[in-house]
Image (cartoon, rainbow over all chains, first blue to last red; front, side, top):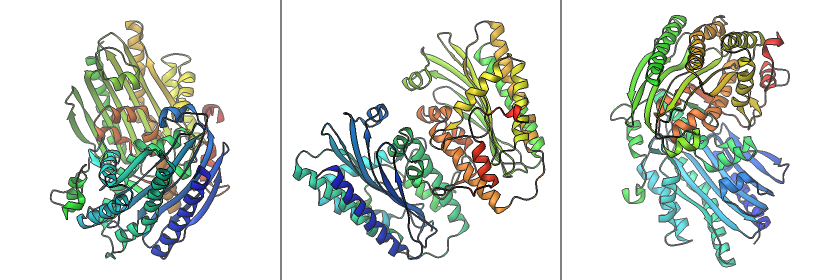
Length: 298
Length: 298
């Protein structure tokens, strides 16, 4: 299977996810924005706003081709002259502060020199950590991983803990998830296995998000909304300071609006804000640690 | 004059600026937050919130000492074993959308090997560009620069245009200002001249800000407030993606709350937002270009 075929399947995956999310949201519909890249390729960015469940979000597909620039060599360790990169990226910011922000990405790169690899991940960022929901999320990921490789969940979960981390806040972005990069297929069978794993992750995404957002909560309090806005500033900090895809996209003159699709609808900053001792907000901060075995906690 | 004396004068400058801004605001008062750095030195971060004029802002002083780490060598071109860095940094986010955000910084570095330099700058970020106010701002900066060196304004203005620039948005942060770095004193007289220039910039800051925010406007419309929130997201993007001080502070394990003092109280993101043709908002975007000679425009 080559990059063009993988890209077609990724585009199908995008549409499948968008369809499922549209049904789940039940109010807003996705807007589709197709774009082309002068240097080669393009994408379709599908965005949703002011839904019943999703306040702001997007499911983006892209397939870009072109020359391997110096920036790509430096930032991504790529070699060769030309490349093809394709993937699906999702970030959904939920309306209710008791519903989480969620992110998923699956991607594939190949170069003219025959290097090829897959990468991806999914992570959950609740405003209020709920142990039951965190455990369910991780069980679902483990189940997708187990179908691919017996130690994949364990390895990719640690990778996510280390990747989705804000060193300057000494906190994880949320309750983690899985992250993997540079998965190099060694045989065609292996290539299919990795690709099926990526597709499996994508196909499970709508169900995973639905499970996280099906509970109907009473109207959010002002305190909950304030906390959501403050936590969203940490999401902004992570994406602009540390997220490799964002940094690479900006540095390599990518399509800004598609790269910054991940931004929340709104974020607030307060100097040196510390939650009240004993509050749910404080409890959440205390739970934003690496290497928590969420599944065994419940 | 050595680093310790310069730091004392910078601390005095901070208090002088805070006093003048407090009188101008007339409602909120600054909170003072002293901190120490385990590796050496510390600072006093003075913050203001919910004022009559200033919605969120800070005037920060710091004097940090320590070993020159690999990160400092890489990111700041520093050499030697130990350093002293001291400075005053200001960001003020005004409450009214017709009042600008403003930033100022003056700083001094010295190393045990005898290297020493000054840096700094000031730039203005209106939500709605007003040519008269932009010209006044630049005239005031030119006047401070002219007292230091006949070509300083011209050189530092270009430097600011290039520095306060968002390549991914193809727009400047605002109407620019001046920026200078690595000004190396070659003699004691020269050192005093650069230092007096930095102090002069600082002492003029309250007046410059007062001039930009003295006009009383009628209550902001929802459209103006929405635009202000959206423009503030560009300020966030600049600071987290490009600002050298922010990046260096985060990378070098600096004091996060003092580094991110520059964040606005609130920011919003909308996918692919384009202002209405012919609107004041569109006019502002069109004016956010490099190398505009603001003084001669009026």
